[in-house]
Length: 210
Image (cartoon, rainbow, N blue to C red; front, side, top):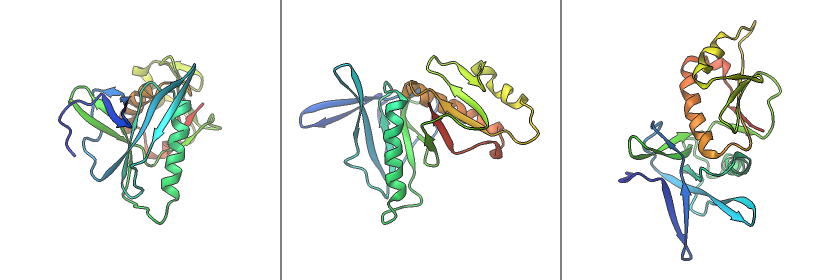
């Protein structure tokens, strides 16, 4: 599918009501095109003083690639539990399962002027603090802690490389539950640049939200 304009807001019209998803933005494209996909929307909604993650998956088909269009203003404590439910539903449906079908987060590439996608099919989320390993924690205020020590973002790669251990370190990428989804995607893209120089044995498919 081709996208002819930069999509920062996805519009849905349901029963005459306009809903919009304000997408995260980045200056890089991880995946530019996804064929045979179903959209899932998670809207930012307020009821009184409460913020709600309003999920619409009416058009999702198990055997297709799923594209998650999530409002960047939502905190992870509301987004990730909904993502986990949908992941489990897809993984558990053996009757319609397609081993090649992937899950992607959508975002807007502000440089390439296109809709872009970040794969996360193999990620397993946990709403808890890691019990072992090197905990790399992205906080709500955009600071980064490595085992409770503050490390500048531009120095993180060298810091991780300099950590001594008698066995391979396991890096546990973790995120503040109050971090907004837009910042989460930005950090996910940043982590992707780190992985090029981190051995596979040092990584895990788990991500922690607490």
